[in-house]
Length: 250
Image 1: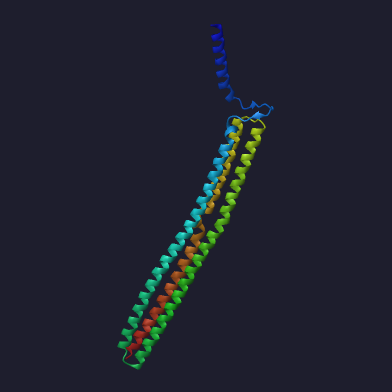
Image 2 (image 1 turned 180 degrees about the horizontal axis):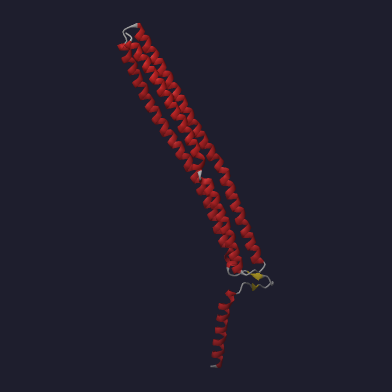
């Protein structure tokens, strides 16, 4: 009985010791070097996950950049197709209108007036199209430049984030190796990571605001297009007035 009781007490002491040991920051290895415990044991696991998340974030950012470029290109192609289709219709309509006017012209003066009208209209159309085309091209070039400028800014933000993460990891490893309390190591590491993530998010928010840099380009394009339309309407009004006067004189 005494032997069994002693064995039972020894087993209980052993179990108690095993339960108590994890709460200590470090245990001594055979060589006297502190063995990592608590957070320090899982540090490698944590940093691996962080590295993976960072890589995933980079992939997502690049995918988003490509998505923006693809959408811009797709919209450009759609608008160009609609513009070409509309211009073809307008060209056909103008030719039909010219033919009707030429059929109505019976005198040399009227025929000359129709020819002058046709020349004035075609000149106005060419001028308007050139102005609108230049405005659109300037807008598209500006957008591309804004996107191109965004890429190195994103790379810089990512590089700064990676550097901060690397510094936090090295600090944690050094603290663990020096026997710093795992809880202190963990809290310091988390604070450093939060600071790095907050800065990265802040940098991203500034970079992602493409609208801020694109809006002035939209305004400039609209102003140029509006002016081209006003000039075209003025030229058309004069051409119509000259044509009408020529026919009324007869």
